[in-house]
Length: 120
Image (cartoon, rainbow, N blue to C red; front, side, top):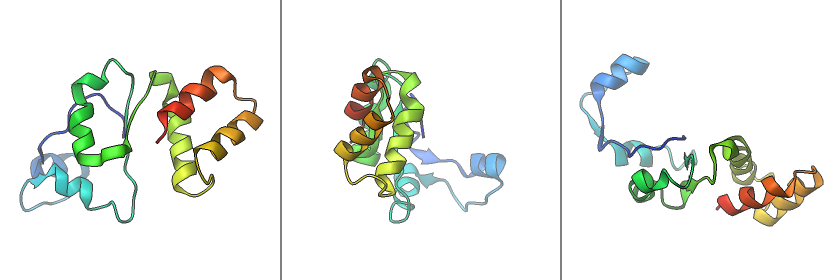
């Protein structure tokens, strides 16, 4: 996910019905909704830039810990998301391996350094 707003405390059953057609018996705590897919999926929140992190970083970190990534600029979103997928799927053993791969792809230093600083 990407965003610059704090998470709501609950997931509204009315909004679930309206937006995705699902049925919930009651509103659910957002913590429960975030925790449930984690054994199978690795959710991340990308905050678009350092200025906006003040609004929401702490609340998202309470839910996702190190899976909150504060981008230096919104233009880094695609590269950081792709790097996260590569790391989580095992395409790269670690951040250094990803950096070496990006360097071989002639990714300019202006992209490479901020990108590797933003990933966990």
